[in-house]
Amino acid sequence: MIGYIIVSVAFNTYQLSNSGTDTSARIRLVSTCMNYPDTWSYNVIGEIRGYEKPNEYITVGGHLDAWDITEGAHDDAGGCVQAIEMIRLFKSLNVKPKRSVRAVMFMNEEMSGTGGRTYASEAALNGEIHYAALESDRGVMSPRGFGFEAVGEKLEKLKSLSSWFAPYNIRDFDKGGGGSDIGPLKPMGTLLIGYIPDIQRYFYYHHSANDTFEQVNFRELQMGSAAIASLIYLIDLLDI
Image 1: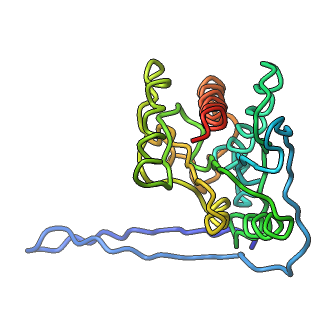
Image 2: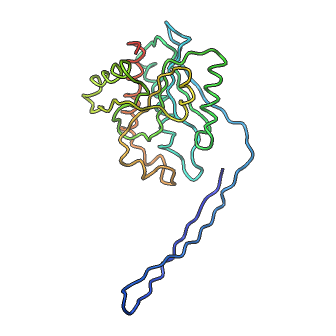
Image 3: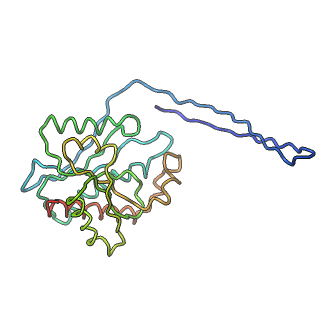
């Protein structure tokens, strides 16, 4: 879908002799949105091969597409950058994960989620084991924690990781996580994780023309990337 919507509102105020002021509104709605025929698009994937369990995968990703009226910096170019930055941090620190770690930029999340569904179907076709998957799609403000699609003892082990992050005021380790792009991996038994930033400013930008790169705080983006890389490192190292 592409196009735009214009809404103009005209207020007419009438002074009534006995009952005060009556305000009525006239609304003019103009829409140029339309659906075009489907076309090819692609997920973009980079990975570090695991040294011990290379056929098990931990996926970190965001989605490449955005609403057409904006750059989509928080939704979700920033999430894609955080996935790439995780790989860069591993490489620069010479971290060698036991499992293969992937950065995935999913296509077509906003319209129909075909990028996430295709990724999962290809993973099943190739017999891949997806140990865990994390999605960053809530903006790239300061990190607050992570949500986990887990219960019982596994959830408690994941929550215990918060002690490593508490000195940096990253404290929200709770049940409930994932995202629309990694959701199709759930039937494979994949641990789904959602990145939780401080979302107080998110709806200043979300799905609006204000979602530009000038609205991204570089330091907050870096802190979120480091938090994500640290969590993935611990999950892989500790076999949680």
